[in-house]
Image (cartoon, rainbow, N blue to C red; front, side):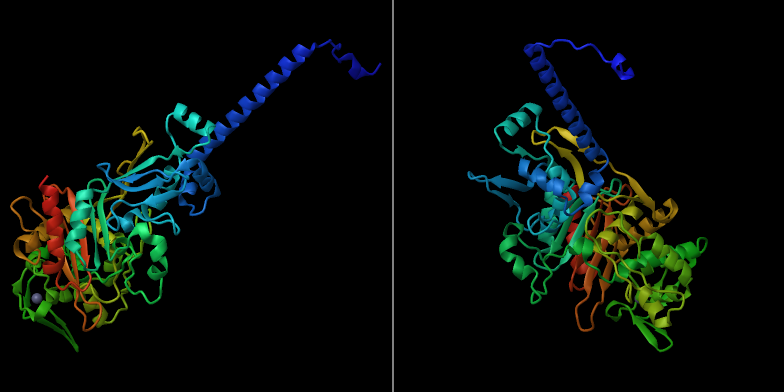
Length: 485
Ligand SMILES: [Zn+2]
């Protein structure tokens, strides 16, 4: 007798019935284990891999979801549908955009690649959390379940107002809440009709097409900041003269001579004797050229860096990095140009909106965001996104001083277009030269009410002329619409 035999259990007779029961039990265990594994995997996928899944432009798992789930809707904050999937009788799905080009850049598309919120919310749009019974029934009969709904922070009325105010001009508008970072509107012109993307694609990407309709100018368009950059110069001047910036005086005769170089005020206007506040309100180029010449270039570069030039923006979609290139070795001409927002400095309308928001929010930049919450097709909320602070761009005191100065732009300077009895706005305009012989790009950044800011606006109108006459009225329409509620 072998030793192992001693431990062998005596054989028992097993009936057919018992065997069947045992097999059935085993099968149940296997199925239960499989379910457990699936649930664990799904849970792991949801919890751990969500970020990777969202960020991956091609994720085979998500494309598998598309076979089981009808891509969910994207809506405005009030529920107005920006994007939805229509299903024909033969099961063919068509992504449609009821507002045509109105939300084209910010909502994006999901047919010729993926951009905008279609890309940002891809994972959610292809996840389905309809109730379990409905889900199971649909699975059993082989029908697709409805994907979850992405409810954005976008405000239909403000988006329409911004779009109408820009009209047929090229440019961009960004509207956001400084205290939360919610993006309320993002418009870029010229646009395209996302419903006709396939038909129009070859023209949209053609080399002969110089309109750049696919470019989201709001986040990707790089422009010289023009006089909106005077907020940066002003901040640096206050930092270098904390005690005596109030003593600043400059006598403007319309031109500023520096050796062989001449800087002119807009249209050669002579502003006369200027305090710092007046020079900022009137956007006096001479005064800011003089300030720029005496600033510490290394410290100015640090301040520009703190204000997110040459840096990543806290923004989850496609954008361009703003650039500030001046070094302490720069020649006088570059210093003069940089001081008035020309030269090699470039910024996006989105970045300028973030700067205005940070000033409005006591120096703290809130992370800009576009998705408010995710809900299932039945409207049950699954996940909410909350505001979060992401950087301190300046001290509270500095933000307070800049706000005062920006109020002066509206009450006594180039921002008079947003002067209203209904609200007090704070602003800075700009007219940025980009090519000799061309009309300047018109800029506006600002917020209202100045004492307790609720919205911040950034506007650029390409070749629009002066910021005060071309861009500020666009902001005016937005402020008026917002504060008429
Ligand atoms: Zn001047």
